[in-house]
Image (cartoon, rainbow, N blue to C red):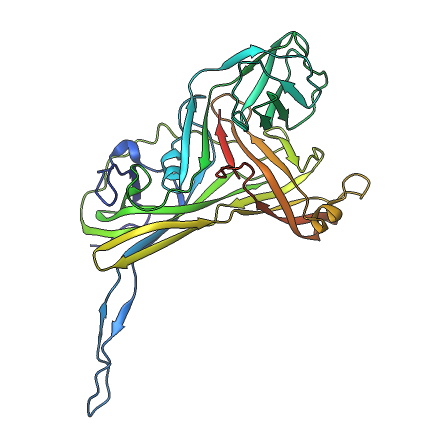
Length: 392
């Protein structure tokens, strides 16, 4: 009997113990597109007999694993402090999840500017603790203003925002830093840490492929007049392949995204410049995912990452922003973009330290564009902070 290619499902659930089937269920279904799987990857050894005649000798497989790629739409969870449905995928790509369940409120100290706010003396002493979050002034000087935090000094309590306010904050300003779910990269290595790998069930019209110990990487695409997407690639240990009915699925947690547009995509800050007219933006975590099999051990490991990106904006005069000097001098600075405006469906990406590389011109409808590669560089002494993804 023929199998219907359109009737495919993937279920993903984090593993408590590496390589042990976590039994994904309906609520673990991934609402995806552009799904592609390579069900039997690996290598084989040719036998290469010497015989008095021509002919193949056959081969014996020595490695067996699975790779798969798919895309999910980039949207929030529907509630500010609830992880998005794709949060588990991030964890299997070496990201840590931190939930701020309720808004953090306080009264600002004197000394704020149109691009900074000095938080209360009791605010966190950890550098970049609030970076990626949104701060809103709820009363007093600057009431009604909100901004994306792109830097925070735990000693001075000063938070820097992505886009200048019309009015500076002062000691009368009451503020609120909204509830959110924050994702930051980590450098976990090995198989001993729970919830850093996933079991994936892939079912094509009644044939189920099981991936165990799966880990991966991802990239993003935010292009004008398109829906934003996350592009995932996973490698897993080969589990069973068997006949199994298509599972029930529950996609109710997946939210409808909004298009990349002037209204929906805001607070763009590229090395301190807020006036960019954006055509395309993407970044790639570029995790180095390795399938490793030796005597006594088989695993999928993430052994390194070097995040990069690409951006295309309308070219400017040197007086407006000297991109060429920034690239030539290897100058670094912050990056920020906020997508979505409705609470629960907002995703912000903030990088404290970005470097421009390989700048060039391109053409778009007769308009000169400035294209550049982006390198995302760890900022703090402890690292693991080059990209922050905040859902709020």
